[in-house]
Image 1: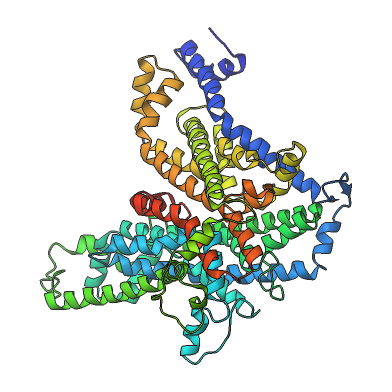
Image 2 (image 1 turned 90 degrees about the vertical axis):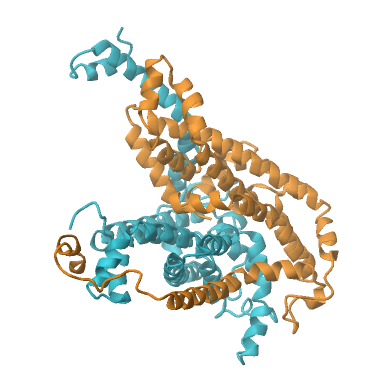
Length: 317
Length: 305
């Protein structure tokens, strides 16, 4: 009855009813791979294969028409002398470093506000979530551009208070705040996740703390923050990784050029321009791999440091 | 954490009659609740302002968008912008763009639901060698920046002559490339009792039977979340179509919008914004209908918007 020799050999150690068990294993192995086939195929053809070949391409000069020419680490070396590249790094890092914490702070603050509500929580939750659903769309990018443009409502509103900045879209120092506002505006998605986390915190913890005379600040740092830290961790990780990949809004707002003065030249936009309008595909691949490495390192850092600030209620203490 | 260590043991004999959770008077409660609603409503107004501005502007004549007239309301509301927007751009009608978007989104939903549910069943319910390794890889792809694969993917599809077709945009959906949905379904299926499969197996059912007649019906909530999100993501997708589509009559709405922006260059803001509204309309309708599913999906699965 043994069908596949390797499997039956492995199960030989596990005592009785041997033939039946090993047959079930054979069935399971075959079924497992058959069911997994769509994902496995996609993983190999669309992810793993392309990853390997983009790593190879990153060491070449390739323009899509002539065969790739091996140039070793040249792409990586030239990157650091490429002013536009350095600019795109600066723009993206600024966006991630300021945008993500602000967005998460807004999300947490509003989630705590809503968590105290007795009525209308569902309504507010939906209303605040809505921007997250549409924020990355081309439509909203167009609206943002119009709102922050010359004599748009933002300009008008500010000059009402005597602040005359003009349009933000054409002003290199104001484009970053504009993009940060666009991401903070989408605080709804992490907020909903925070809210779900807040609901998991047992109310008697707060009651006990009140009895001990703890004020709201103590309660926040001694109860809310540690209990919520796994959720903070999740949101921080996901939002950071997403922030690095901002593309459509940057493309639309700057007409695909990253201007004015390169102030909206986000990393992925520059990568796109190098790869698909200059056809420097080797260079673009090197950029992609550098992005992968940086995102990987940041993920690792978030994971590593999480041990010191993320509290899982499962592990005692 | 020291403050929280005591309560459970200390309560029984200690007298603390003064502690009463309902000690706040009704009046104080009402003030608090009113204050909450004032703050929350003000915030709602701020958050929804861009959307309201967009809708209001889409009905306004060009001369009133921007400029000194900042009020959302206008006595000159008309449908003119929508009439212009429906004409389309580059010789292609907006209805055609809508149809294209719809084909892509429906294709994405069908492909994702089929491939992700089948693959998730393997991860969640079948024991086979290599499963945990593949599962780890699947999780890793969740964190993978998409840009690492776009260049080789483009080269492959270019060599196969599939650029300017929908194949590159849809094939990933049929191969469960959106790992998030696989993950969502795995999590969902793991919470279904294992006795279900065991009982079915004793009755002689194979994996195909267990999957189709036991798992799929029970997975309805996960399938609905997946459908909603894959529809909306596909509907809003910009980079994919930007890379692969060249001829305007194949464009979905986001690309058509870009074309519109390029060609009209702010001369006809009204029509541009009207078209933006039209492009978002299905997403907004989806949101209004499936609000619960969407928000619950986010809060339990951490789905991104």
